[in-house]
Image 1 (cartoon, rainbow, N blue to C red):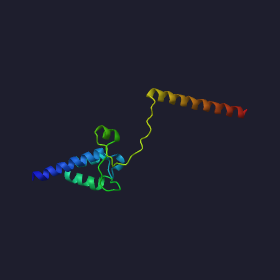
Image 2: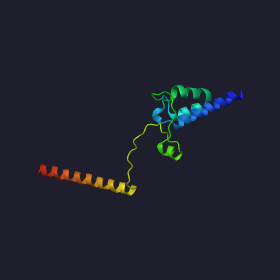
Image 3: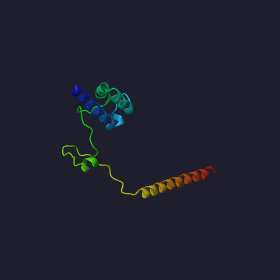
Image 4: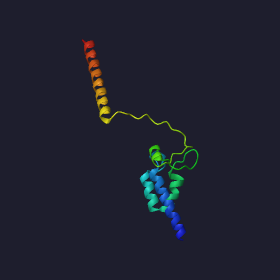
Length: 125
């Protein structure tokens, strides 16, 4: 009997980790929080329901969630067989520079609106 209890607890822990780590877009039928509650309150049935009905599997069948690239490199777990993904170009500007650029864009937009308003007024005369 202890073996069955250990299996149920292991299944529940695996399901909980999977529910928590899974992106909201990959969760079917119920919100993630409801799945967590089901798995905790009804460990065996909730876990089985999660793996059969609650999660979305990829085209290749069952697959483990992947670590983001930064964590994979930090943990030394970079896989050579994993397909190479193009990283989005990082913005090298500081936050202050980005805000200043946005302020300039807003000011330019306001000036264009003002010019368009004056042209409309001139055309109306």
